[in-house]
Image 1 (cartoon, helix red, strand yellow):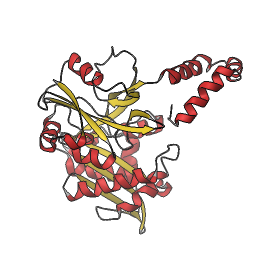
Image 2: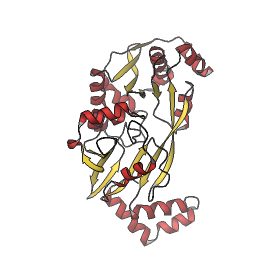
Image 3: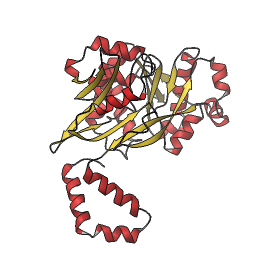
Image 4: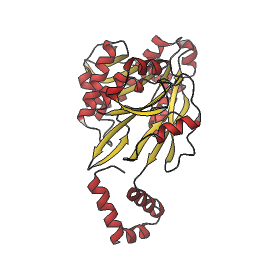
Length: 331
């Protein structure tokens, strides 16, 4: 039996046990992480917590929708062994029709026949820490090795104020619409995780000035990397040196370092310097009928500015755009 329940109805012990022992365990899926990162979330559960899956929900202008919060790259179908495709489809289809817009990112790749969903493949980078530090270091790029050897005035420590993370991270996330409350929730989450041995934070200082912070969030199998730095931090290779220090301290373990991205070429190139390997996750998107028409028009006219201009001046296009604007839902 598959059922949809609110977070208040969830048996937290059973839920976290499944996440901890899942074949694809992720820190994003623990109940404590979900509570901090999202005000309202629900779960689809198969039988007695055999397979579980969280969803993040919001409501604007009377429209209920499912989204991915900031600092949550992906979710999945969590169970001891990978469920078959039929079960996965049933879990997705268990979402009520009132959720007219769905934007979710999944680890799982097998949902290739989901009707009404657009599926986009996304790039990620991971590094297995089971080898010795020396063996991992051998796979570093020549450029990274050279940067790590450069003399500097950096001091890297686990002591510092996480409240400064927001200012540093904002400098590298200017193009996003992330709000201060999202940062504050993530900082509270990180403080809780550190207090409960579920995270570590490293601070890099240059002549006493904080230039970089890197947070490492521990799941049962993977450790997620969340970096932030200012311009001086990038110039002094602070993030590289923090990550290298962390790898030194956590090599020869069963963990996998999850860099949580990225499809941005410059960031991808940076992560590849550590000898990482590519992995993928999948973004599922379902739109309302009005949004689907809008997206279709934009795609069909994207390479023909005259056709786009003509359509944009049409009454129908203006009506569609107005309806989307009034819903205040991001395309």
